[in-house]
Image (cartoon, rainbow, N blue to C red; front, side):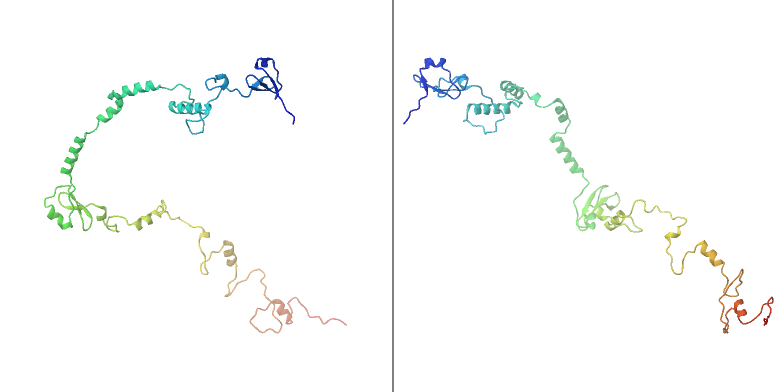
Length: 309
């Protein structure tokens, strides 16, 4: 079986060695494997110890401060630095993790310590002035106590007649509720007057009072200005409905009818005409001139001519 050997030699001779792209070479004394990339020799198995890694070996890396991966203690160098940058950016609240914060931790610690030890800066001067213009708890309690002593509202009674028994000497303004009707009354100085809404009767045509919900709904349905109506002085004929006993006639129709002869003893003018009856007719029909001539009557201007042979 054939043996394939790659280019090989001592590491001392490596600087003068030119490798084509993809061409391998092996140093026998150091056991290093190189591959040419067309311009230089790339070391494939550096075999560098843990304490021998340098920046040149690592090369440049770019931090991703917006890394989506969950922050962890484990990852590549780029991931670990990206995790740190992401946390720092969140702490300082800046656009970039490397932007200078408004305050350093030491400065914030100093401010907090000073603030905690100085009660004046906890509120503004305006706050102190506003809070100073208030009643104290004791003052409020005293005012409520006075109000409860002087209040005009009295404990409710069972019926209206019980008011006089329970409060025989009322003062002007005293107010009491009656349980059986749920009416509220106030003493006017001379009598108890119902003041609650449910004690007011519904209005009628002669008594003032509350409006019923049905009346309110009816009023809501009336158009604005509906009672502001003025009847017109005249109406157009087209808005009036005609009937068999009541109809309109035009001036033309009236003129036509006025020119007609009466049925009883009519008087004709011009050249009136009538149908010519037959010669055998013996009725009350009008005899026309044609009818008369058909019977053989000769007009005054006529003559009888026997003719010639």
